[in-house]
Structures are given as structure tokens and as C-alpha cells.
Image (tube, rainbow, N blue to C red; front, side):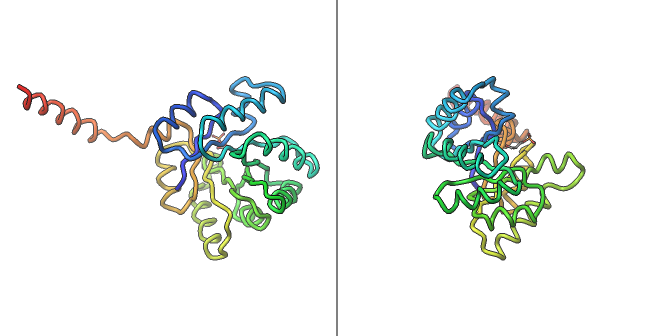
Amino acid sequence: MKFFIDTANLDQIKEANDLGVLDGVTTNPSLMAKEGIKGEEAVMKHYEAICDLVDGDVSAEVISTDFKGIVEEGKKLAAIHPHIVVKVPMIKDGVKALKWFSDNGIRTNCTLIFSAGQAILAAKAGATYMSPFIGRIDDSNWDGMELIGQISHIYSVQEYKTQILAASIRSPLHIVKAAELGADVCTCPLDSILGLLKHPLTDIGLAKFLEDAKKMNA
Ligand code: G3P
């Protein structure tokens, strides 16, 4: 399973990249706005800065909602850097645009997936990735992981090539479950990635080893 970081914050991207386990980045308009990035030029420059930091795919989301607008915007985003993957919402014109991008060699990430039916449409339209929003499904009192399992099964039976990108991850356990259920990629906040490190027995064990190591030098 590939590891992407779900942020537009350059320091966090650097920190995750320094760990040596990062395969890419996902952003969305909310994450970009959180960094205070305003205006088309600044947005483009920020995507370029992210692409220069990480040797992997970087999802950049369109904000148009009509076919023509999505295609024009997607072409501009894709031209920024070869790492760019155009993020397209799961709406009717989005599906049409996914097919256009696929036919024209532009890689895509279909976002805002909340059902298996939407996942089938994204695959049929030739999306490179598609992003089920686990945490938001859990928030609405359904089981986000159940959806990952269902999509994983359908994609395997139907031999769809679209990659399952588990998004809206809220905890290290989400990452472990996504891996278990066959997600191809997990995009996570930095805290969830670092959370994978933690185990009290590791800390206790290391403290004991270090204490005993002092005896070797005594
Ligand atoms: O990148 C999209 C997704 O990961 C959003 O996550 O936490 O806003 O539901 P969240």
C-alpha cells in the first residue's frame, strides 16, 4: 500500500518525506485555503513547490463543476509538473471529464466517493485513483471501512485497474484497516502516519535496553 500525506502544508510534507516512506501527496481546496494560499498564480506555485519536494503523485483538485471548465482547469493543472494528478469530483460532468482525461493521457483522482456505485462509475470512466472518504462516512454513523472492503472486492472480481485511495483518514487504526482490506493507497494526516510508530512496550523496551547498555560501558 502506498502512503500519501493529506495536506498542503510544506513543513508537514517535508517531515513525512524525510521519514523515507512517502509516495505522494493529496490536497483539496480546504487544505489549500488552510495554508492561506490565494489567487491562481499562488495556487499554481504552491503545487509546483509540493511537486519539487516529493518524488511521487500530487493530487491537485479542480474547482469547476461543468465538463468544459473541469477539462480546461485540469489541463492547466497537469501542465504544472509531471507529478500532478487531476482531482475531479464524483458528479455527472466529472465522470465525463474523467473519461476525457483518461483518453488524453492525463492521470486523475476521482474524489468525494461515498458508495460502491460511485466507485464503479469512477473505474468505468478510467480514473487512475478514486478516493472513498472513510472518516466522513464514520462521522455520519456508517462504516467507512466496510465500503473499502466492498470496493476492493468489486475491483478484484471485475479486474478494474483504478487504484483505491483510502481518504479522510483519522487514525493509525484506519491505516492498518485500509491495508488489511486491500486499499492501494492511504492518504493520511501526518499525525496518523506518526501514530503508527507508537507502542508503549517499544518505549519501555528501549528504556530498559539503554539502561542495560550503560552497564556494558561501566
Ligand atoms: O483529501 C480529502 C480527504 O482526505 C478529506 O479528509 O478529514 O476533511 O474528511 P477530511
